Image (cartoon, rainbow, N blue to C red; front, top):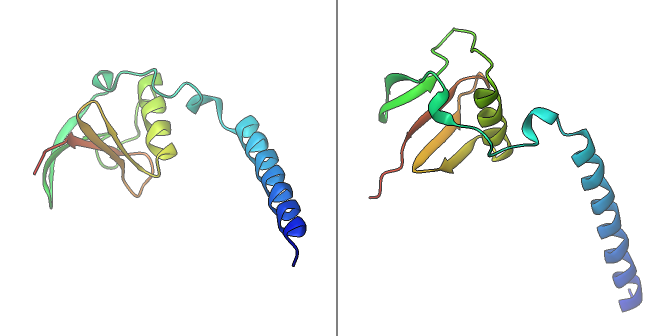
Length: 109
């Protein structure tokens, strides 16, 4: 293979990736576009205890959440970060049911 071929292959691959990213951005749900403009303190957190200690969760297990803008935006933000998020001294995660959010303060070991 020649260098020219590899350069063209790289450039065309990048163009394809750019086009795919643009299309994905256009199709992204609007509820997650303004990520970061929410207040997690406005969510009705409940204290719970798990295998790794005490944490807060919303909604409680087997309860449908009140889908407030703060809840929807935080859930979208966490999902955009592969289900885990560190923000403002808190560690947030999404439970396997994909609607329950957990949080606990970040502790330094």
